[in-house]
Length: 217
Image (cartoon, rainbow, N blue to C red; front, side):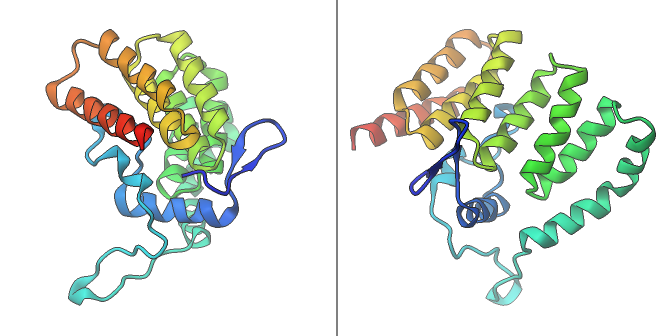
């Protein structure tokens, strides 16, 4: 997934613009793979599949128009406009910052979304759920190490947080090709969260099996 990646001066991994755009296209088609284990509805490994020419199906089998990142940015700006107006008089309102962050994330403006989540976390650093959102935005914007760092910080506040452990596994596997690191995170997830439902456990176990097979190959 990181073939052709360049090394960021700060030590983080960054993808070229073309690859970031391709990843955004994949996200539109299959949904974000890095996110919440408890609301995942699709196979998290779908993001690893190549999709350079993927377009959503349209009635009659005709290819639908895939909005560009610029078009999605305009949609996000318009939707966020009333919230941004409120932020001018209340710039540290965590709820508003989170709402704006979600708008930009949903339109794949990951850098913008991460910025608003970061501001929200300055007011509420122990908000593990929002830190998870920020980590996924950093990851999809190409900052793999930054995403892992945010998730590790989440675990300092809540060492057993299932979503943080799940995402660390996904990012280490897909973003760092660190199979052992991914397996360790998922093993800890299962060990420290015995209350996980059977289908969530099955999801994690399936990922572990796939990671092991990929590691051998």
